[in-house]
Image 1: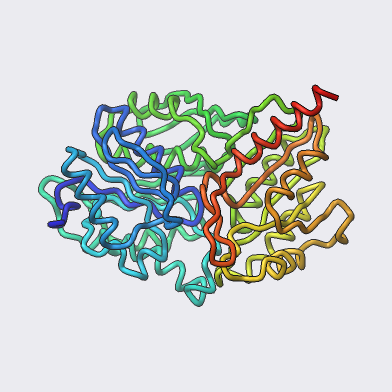
Image 2 (image 1 turned 180 degrees about the horizontal axis):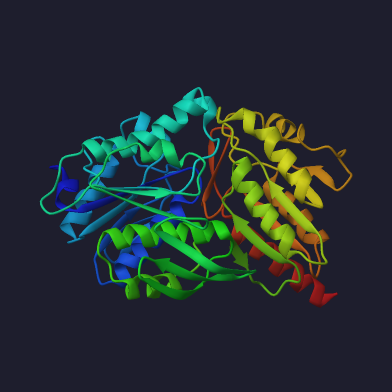
Length: 407
């Protein structure tokens, strides 16, 4: 593919949570400014005007797959390539040969510990992206730049890497900051502050963590010389990413949200937010954990998070792969203090699990269905099963509402 990354400005985004949202936001801001963009993420791909879903279940594509996509971007006339970079991608050399100009970090919390062997190894894998940028070949007129989350507890580790320019962001501090934050159930409002300028932003994505993603995206684009007015307009025109705090509206009484949260930290952010937003009703949580040898240690921690925030818990399948579905569920259940049957059920069949909570939830309640997001397949005992949480919810709701009207 003749090293296509050498012919574009390449932005790599890493972190534990928020990578996909941030990649999509960066692409949106660059497009708003009139640039042609290519993108790869856990959720989707983009080459110029062409966009399609990522059905590979891989955050970062393999070496040949990624190079092929980058070549398509070059051939389509893209100036920028925005790629989501996982820790696996770094340790498996999936971005070998990709000359990255800007590295951005969202945040770092515990994840993929069993694969990497320790948190230190996981952190180092994330840091390898910044090392790659620091030591990468310069392109004519393009600076090597690092975008760092000053609020993150591991900020100093990433800050040790050398670059032509570093830009920080955060809610508590940084070059790019958010002040006058107002959180709403369907989004947020904040003032985007940079040196010598500040503008109000009406943002469609809910939660302070999504404001962090917005700040990261804004910081990336500022370093690339994107006009401040275009950054603001791009943020205000951005819409909820499918499968990320994705609300279902099918005429039902309870509030229902689909999200990709699949680790203790992301699940806690999700449930704590909807705990606060569920003023008088009950909070229902439906989730599982991925099999295939992935982070067994996080399972009881996820159970403990749900036990802390949710009024009702239903544990179910996520992507068990070849693993025993009930063992995964029982591992999660170790963190749940209540007894099964006491507002707590184990139902491996994900559709039946969702059906149960939809039958129990009513007006004023919140239903959070986590783990799959906008994924379109499920891996169960060697089989690939077509699956989409949102479509399943809509189908069940339509049937329920229709039956209700007949009765």
